[in-house]
Length: 305
Length: 223
Image (cartoon, rainbow over all chains, first blue to last red; front, side, top):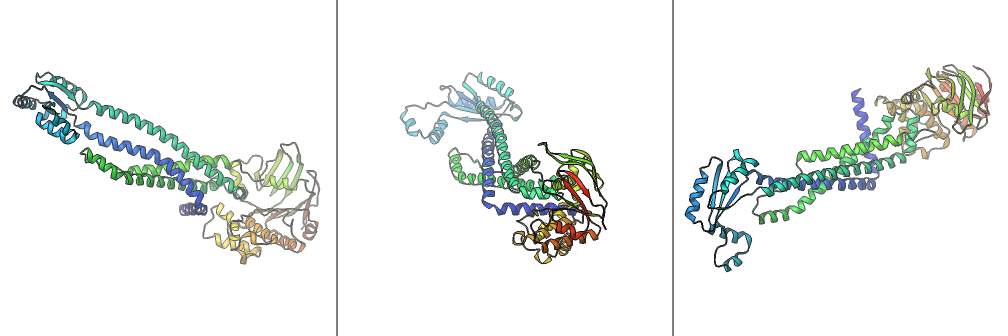
């Protein structure tokens, strides 16, 4: 019984594949439209994932920069660094002397020649304070920044985190936007599949009518159309996967160049297994659903005369 | 097998296609419905196959009440009725074999059974050697016989035919009639709508004559 059932479904699947293969141009067009439609939200999602991955490293080592007053001598700065190092809330302190700061700035900024023209070093010495992991949450960090700012040697205490937070808030907003866009485009895929299936139903009007006359149930008549929608949805998802993959491949070189300029070891994240499965699943479900909605509506209208 | 009492059919346009039809056919009986076009022959067959529902009256076919049968049960009801259409209603993109196999596939018959039963049905109508051909390449008489093979492949207890010899010459008509007589002799209930008197005279079976939606005469059971 179950074997018969599976056999019938397999037969229907191959029948549907055959029907699609018989009209390759129409099938390819539908698949391409679905592919492009799905590729847009997938690509944007991937972009956000990458930005988030790039910036997530930053949030976890929230660090505080203490810019020292210009007249604080090197020895006093070292002493202050030692004092801060002993605080229980601090894990590590780096001392960047005025000279070191200048050298680094010259190297990274490209303003070397301009700086050479100045008769004195305009950069302050900096203590980079890495808070202990236990203190790495917003309130504790704020308190620490306030405390560190009270040392007389310190001109400015700055938590290098605010902009990361703002970035993350923006990313969260952008994610919502992508979700809405994905919803709209999913509806578009439903309509595309629905229209394709509607035409297929109308094309096979005679066949449906005859099948009804000899006792075919609606479920039986519906089945090949559902498979057809499922297959086209899946193929569309595969097409969008290829489109996104191809885009990444083209962009990988320039992205590497760009991140290298920032001294970053950033690796572009592609579609991993779970994202791929989610994409294929979405394509399949949308195809099936679009087909189900269209067939349900049009099948009822076709009755034997 | 078929029992109509005081059955009326009025179309939404207001046209009374059938009026006060009383008709009873036992299982295994064979009968003809005759009358001019528009007399209600086709409407009667459409009621029996539940393409239309009666407007009024009691109609029982194969132990099912046509007024009350739920819509979702209609496919199962139709599986017990083989119908031969005047215009054959064959699928032209499929071979003769696939056309005849369709009722078996629809009912989910055991796939190992299908070839044997399709060939048995094709053999009965004498088309075993044409199973690989497409209907478009066959003559009108051959197409009609494919339609008959499809109607009987499920071995339905009731066989209906609407003008089965409509476009055929008398030799071919005789051949088709012989096929129906053969099914009748095997216990199938056969009801044929036709205005072909040659056919009726040759068969010497029961005849219902319809006129303007009413049964004008019933020749009674002949054996």
